[in-house]
Amino acid sequence: MALVTHGALTGWSGLAFASSGWVVGLALFFPVFALGGMGAGDVKLLAAIGAWLGPVGAGWTALYGALAGGLMALIVALARGYLRTAFANLAAMLRSWMVGGIRPVEGLTLSSSAGPRLPYALPLAAGVMVTLWMH
Image (cartoon, rainbow, N blue to C red):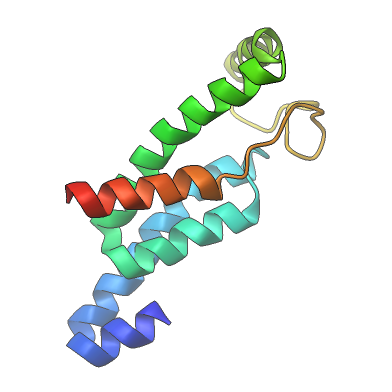
């Protein structure tokens, strides 16, 4: 819809703006998805946000969303008594990557982990709000 709207309102430049925002949004989150740390819906959501806000807006939304997501993840981990385990898992993942390269780590992906979940749409919503407010 964003591609059609931007294209209809501003022509080829609007279509390029929306398309490049979509590509940037997709490119920013796809690696995390490929490593099993995020669902495909979150990747598609940032791509859609990028189509509306453009490539720079997608970047700022991802940055602010990551900050909000980190804070929300700390709160969820503290509330569930999972913080120590989360840091131990992070250390294990970094060790695995240093030895075997960056790849999904068995037992630490969304499909195999029993840890608490945080729907990333919430941090992305916060990221969009801050992006629209600040830029």
